Length: 439
Ligand SMILES: [Zn+2]
View 1 (cartoon, rainbow, N blue to C red):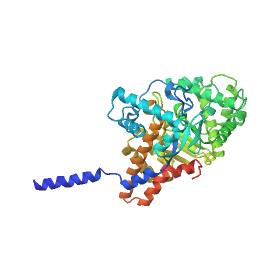
View 2: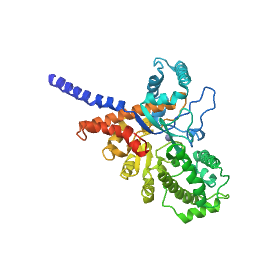
View 3: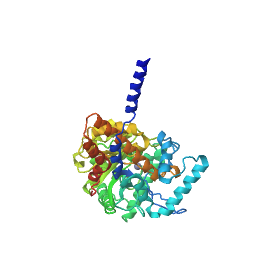
View 4: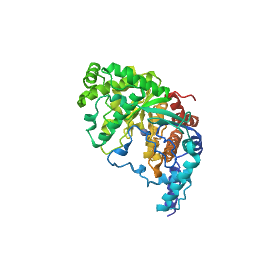
């Protein structure tokens, strides 16, 4: 009997030990780091009753058919209450409509009292110093140095009629026309009324000047959301074929899918090369979701290998956004390339700290200079405002880092000072390098 009791006591003690996967002083250090968020969609503060901000994404998903979200993104996941309590001090004792009303009031009060300072306040709450802001345009309340612009450039890849491409799925039906509209806006901004007759003239008078305009407007990177539209297999371009396709359809007509792909493959690399030449990084959405007709297979990180292996693109820094989740092994295999990086944006919103810690540990064991923090903070309405998503992402990422680094120190993989250095690299220093920021 006694022996059994002793055995239980020992088991109990080791279970307690196993339940403390975080070195609290290391966690404290990680929480003190002012982070750089590699990828997010902050909203412009709009006074109550003002015109809504519609420039937070080139491909907002509110127009596609309803689709399911990963479990942690459901508003009833407890993580959102935790965030709301941290940001707005809404009493956790409230339930139902009373909770909803209290939250609504607290958010409205904060928006009113903070005004144009609301976005910077939101960053402070999440421990974020600088947020890479994926937006069609910036605006009041979203100024440097706290908010740095990342512009959208899929539209530049789609100059000719997109109706054939759009017809492919119920999701793409509403997404492609948004790109066509954005290209018209870019052309208007350049005072170009219609497409030039040749591809070379299109690149010279629209592609290059648009990227230059984005750079002059403060953009530090451009973003491709192509995975929502087509597979990421940007093959070695058929240069003559691309010129032929463009010339054939510049004045109208719907190209075949094969023809359009030939043109896109050429333009993707042209745009990425130009971005690099103008000292801008290139972000690429690579994730299993979102949308009921979205193609996880088409967004596999390995599909980007031919582009990453294009020697003329080695001057361009690429970031595999959202870590390519769940295909993190494929992402890892690409991080050996000198110009390829990844970020954990959205992973730290969708995944538990424990699951994310496993991924971080795997990546940091091999390519620690290539891993960046990010949140993908987006506006999901009152109970999932972008400031709440930023808070959830930041807290999840820090906890995950603490678990991963604590494990690495305890296993003797790294020293304690190295753990702190790795935390700084992921949360801040690597982004300084990738986006060419000053420290
Ligand atoms: Zn995003």
